[in-house]
Each structure stands twice: as C-alpha cells, then as structure tokens.
Length: 270
Image 1 (cartoon, rainbow, N blue to C red):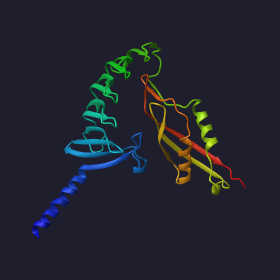
Image 2 (cartoon, helix red, strand yellow):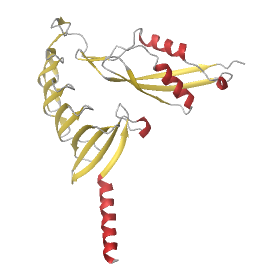
Image 3 (spheres, rainbow, N blue to C red):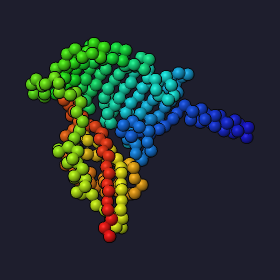
C-alpha cells in the first residue's frame, strides 16, 4: 500500500510539474489569442531550463507550423533559430534571433522545397543583398540594404522583363471592383429568415477568411454575433463570391487572410 501511495504521489508531482512547463493556447490567423472554435493554430510551450522555453506552434489540424526558443514563459523574447513549416512538412523559413533581434541569414522555401528568398540581418535590420525567386528559379525581386536603408531595388516579371522598381513589394488581396463591389454583392445576396423580417435589426460583424494563391476563398469565420442564422447566412453569401485577386509578395502570389467589417441595418416589414 505504501508503495502505491508513493507511486501515486510521484505521478501527481510529475503531472503538476509537467503542467507548469507545458501550456497550450489558441490563435486566429492573425496570431491573436482566441477560442478554440475560431483558431487556425495552437501553441505548446515546454520549459527546457531556467531561462529557455521551447515553443511549438501547430496548425489546428495538428501539423507542426513553427519551432523556436524564447527566454521567457510569456514568449516575448526570442533567442536562437526559428523554423517555420508548411502543412506538408516542408520547411518554409529559417531565421535566427540574438537578444530578440533578427541576426544572420534568412532562408525561405516554396512548398516543393525550392528557394523562395534569401537575405541577411544585422542587429534586427536588413543588411546586404535580399533576393526573391519565382517557383521557376528566376529572380523576381532584388534589393540591396545597409542597415535597413534601401540602396538599390530591381524587379522582374515571370518572363524576365523589367518592372517598375516603385511597384510595392506587398499588395493585399482584393476583389474586382474593390470594396464597393464586395458590399454590393453581400447586400444583394443576404437574406433574412421569415421570423426576422418584421423586426428592426442592426447587425455588426467581422468576417475573416483566407484567400489562396489561386484567389479562392476558404475558412470563413464570423465574429461579433450570437445569432447562428447570421453566421450561417454570411458564410453562404461569401461562398458565392467570385475569385479574388490574391495577395502579392515581391511579385509572387501568396496565401493571405482578409478581414471585412459588415454592418446590416434592416427595417422590419410590418
């Protein structure tokens, strides 16, 4: 009996210590803490030693998204190498931190393993040559920096033709016709259930979704309402959307997240 009590005490102590060193939390696509139902990612933290915490971030479906080290439990102070991964397990990016500042080379990869980016940081600032590549291996963008000061920039399309160097390196995803067209599509297609038609309603929500590299919408999430019919109807309407123009990163189409605020004011039909 005494051995069982000792074993029980040991397991209780072990579980207590482990729970202190292992913490999980959930994040939305913008890496803001959220409920599990709204999460795209979750985080697990393990204490390695007195001032070192190993962090593993996962896609909500369970695949590893990042592994890195922090000097504090709140994960504010980065130190050492950080590795980021695509869902298929392919390395997406490798960077290093020294005293919470980017330091040394940065490497980026496409999902097929080919190089997408290379450059170098010094004391948290871009320093030297940065190159960005298309999946074909040709250069899309070239920049030369000296401690974050841009010295030279050149860019090319996928055919190798020169592009205006003033073209912005990052372009947000958008729908043809812009925001006005988006709101028109939502208003024209949004329907109220019979039991709500006679009521005066004000509905204010935010809609977050992913726009793929091909311009397709997915993972639609609605926040700001406790009415299931509102969430269901907005998701239905957004699934009717035509393809978007994807976000561009240094001339390459990339997956991105879009958040749209919506305000509905309905005057009940008497």
